[in-house]
Amino acid sequence: MRFGKGILCLLSAAILAGALLFAGNNAAAERQEEADREAAVVLSIEIRQDDGSEQIHCWRSETGEYYLFLPGGARMSQVSISRIWVPGEVRLNGVLLTEGMSCQTFRPDEAYELTVCLEDGTETGRLTFLSGADVPAMYIDVRSGSMDYIHRQVGNLESGSMRLYDGTGERNWSGQLRSIQGRGYSSWGADKKPYSLELQTSGDLLGMGRAESWILLANAYDPTNLRNKLVYEFAQEAGLAYTPQCRWVDLYLNGEYAGLYLLCERIQVHPQRVAIGESGSFLVSKSSQWRLDSRNRTYVMTQGQTALRLHYADMPLDDVQRTLQSVENALTAEDGIDPVTGKSYGQLIDADSWARKYLVEEIFGNIDGGTLSQYFYLDGSDGTGKVYAGPVWDFDLSMGKSVSWPSDAPNMFFANRPGNWDTSWFHGIYQKEDFRRLVERLYEEEFRPLAERLLETGLDRYRDAIGPAAERNRLRWDEDDPAQATEQIRSYLTARLDFLDSVWLEDETYCTLQINALEGEVICYALKPGEVPPEFPEFADTDTTIYEGWYTLDTDEPYDPAQPVYEDTVIYLKTVPRERELEAGEALLLRLFRGALMGVFCLIFAAAILADVRRRRREKTKPRTVPSGAETD
Image (cartoon, rainbow, N blue to C red):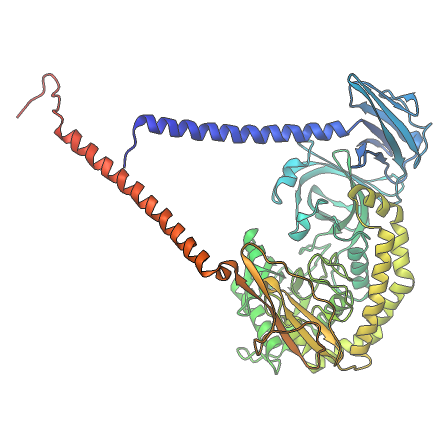
């Protein structure tokens, strides 16, 4: 079908105008965002540190308070005003501020009256120089001077430069960044973003060994900023090989204080990281298939729908898949033997590493235990051909902290769940009596004493190490009180150990209540016979889904969550599409409306064809003009 030139021109013009308007709106929005950001910056200071200096912008809270977050080891004699951003006088307690003047007459942690005299009036507020915490400070400046592009999408990256100082202000490392970019899945949705760093040349950051790849964990869901750090160091003490090292840092991005972060080694095959052999080895991690597909990751899939991201392999991909499939077969078989190869699970995995990894997941109540961020490796150089569990990773949602289903109940199983999106390897191996006995022995002899020591002295030591830094981070990101949140960790771990003692040391009898919730999530409570589970959350109907309530899986009968449990029970949340709940008359009207729309579309299409046929006929009946000099019949 052909359209007239006029119509085509109009359509083209409309499309072009729309594109220009969209681009203009985007550009205007970006300019406004930049202007708003600069308007919040009244002044910037310069910190003279070691063999260089750093610029830090003042930050304004939503309540209108202004703060300058000083780095660790900084003294006011090192601070000077580097820039006044507003076109007018700026005074602090009546003292006129000028670029280049020293700030040594001001005291840290004292609020001063800030007066900004502009052409259209005077604005007042309060400004505080917040003293630095005794943690290292990291400064990153990206090429564009703004994090806007990086924050727009998780895969966006920029190059830049980085300087790192220890807690006393002495420079630890400086150099060029090949890239900084966002990372994570659910954590990327928080306002405080996590990042991946690639150094231009390898560096030994804060004594953690030379490497180019590093991770900055934001711990946005953990107001204590303790969970990842204390679990990683616990795992190191508990003998989990290749557990990543980490250090707290105050992060400054393009001069803006970004909060308290955890600088970590990346889990990668590397002489300073996961130091496995270069031949016949692999490193994988469990994840969900949709996550891997959304980021275009390379992965293998088992018959049990276990998706394993491939981080490294010095062997054919098919061999990796066969090895992991054999492991899954043996773990899920009742006799623990892979029916394909005839090998037992003890021949296929290193049971000690699996037991230690399992204990870390369960003791700390990791909401992703056994499911997400679960690493496994095969070391071709050790000659065993066995798959090891570890290293540990990602514990910000643990110890009673969650963003979805309530997980603060201490009597839950995490790694030992019978399937959460895929085949649960840890649940399968936990059914083997010899493995369970190994877990009980390790818990009693090694893990329980370590956990007790953590409660007695370790938790306080971690809290005190970053107390002022955690408070500054709370102020920047409006988070919960870190001291109070730390006591919640203590309460949870105390109750958690009591529960695990009853399971592994006292041989208490429990019934399991398995809850198949939304999007494949599985929750598993351990209840004494006659005990009632914790209160279930409410699920509100949506425009597309109606929640009919809880039903037992075996009988498909309605289930009352408030009733006592006397036997192992599996329940699920029944949902129906919203359309099924329409009244008969409403459904009929909806079908008539859809039919009418289809009819109108068909009429328009038929009319367009008819008009085209008529036009062609008119063109055939018109006399043709013969060019001068042309031959005619």
